Length: 553
Image 1 (cartoon, rainbow, N blue to C red):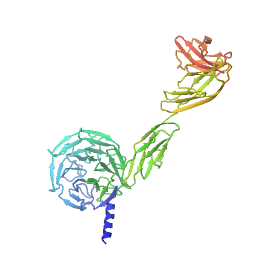
Image 2: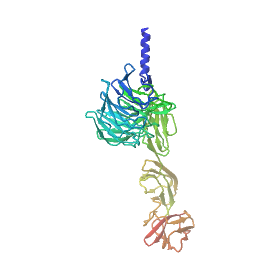
Image 3: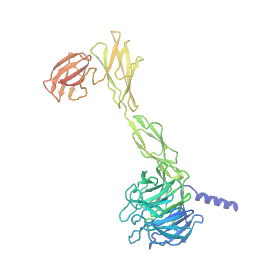
């Protein structure tokens, strides 16, 4: 019998302490309630005021985590209200602001001493009377901000219980709002949500500044409720048909993760933490007020989603980058809904992954930006020049500059400049290759076979820029005339948009072979008597000169 009892107790303890789980506790002692207020002190929690199904209330109830029992305490002595702010500092609780059902906004501020079960009125809140503000404590100070006094607000105030004074601080960093949630972690405060907003901010009291943090990943953040356990913040969000989502926030990684869903949907609830447990109770589910009360056991480790790439995230077209998520029970990638732990990427884009860590919820990674760079294009043309055994190679490579080059001449030699020259001592067929690398490290190669049958002992190849064709010019970048056909055998036609005074045709050495005056915007040039090769046509008008290459076949 003793063995069975011990086994039963072990099972109960295991269930009660399972990570990322909700366990229902005894119903709130005051009955159904929404927009109530609450705080925790030591091992006990307190929920009070708010709206019941019939009236505003002023009763107060204490929850003992050791006995899991509710005990009624002395009523709140101020005006009955709902949507007030409450927090604890040390061994005292504080409550202020709120409104009644006639629409009257309140500035009263009260202190509760659980040891004496007494309320003491303190200095009124320094801002305007309001409802649905946010409050939290950091160290020995309390803070209240945002809310609605007939209009949404974003002012923010600090309360010092040592001298019972209020001090206005820096305005909340986001837009005016009401129905937001807040909590504190260490020496920082956090505030977000409210209305249709999902932005989220951190408050640093040391320098009185707000810093925007990662947006809450949930939606429906009006009247969400927040609490913190150790170094993690939590927000219970939503009133959907499937319940309320619990999201966890890590200030270390500045990330939100989806945790255990609370099947009982609600907003306008009260939440707080005691030790390493979180508690949520009362609220409204869209159909009516609630009185159920729940305990949350967090995970010992915060869920995370991290993507690791197997190389640089800037790759070249045709390459594959592998993105791998950290270990989890399941995965969903943003790109195409892939469910594998690793994803092969060949396209530019921003990639993220949702990692399900099993019992400890899901996390969404930061986006990894992958850039797929286009390849450079390696190409060249080889033409015989007018001189016997003299060849011209045009370097036609393009890509993201600066480009680097490697010419392989097919005879065991190479050059690494853009416009080299090369001499072949032995006739034969040679495979000439040009390898190009661009600024992104992407490469391309072009090869072609050429046969050099020489009567003289050598063949000579000169690589040139196709724009300059090896001849000095005053301007080789203007594009003010058309030239066709090109390559040509007998005649080329020239069309100009601007009247040029003269033309001249030169060979690769700069020797002028043809020249004359331009008398029309369209004229023909006879090249039938020229040898096969590359020539440069120049149109000249005073100080302006425009060049274009002609290939004679």
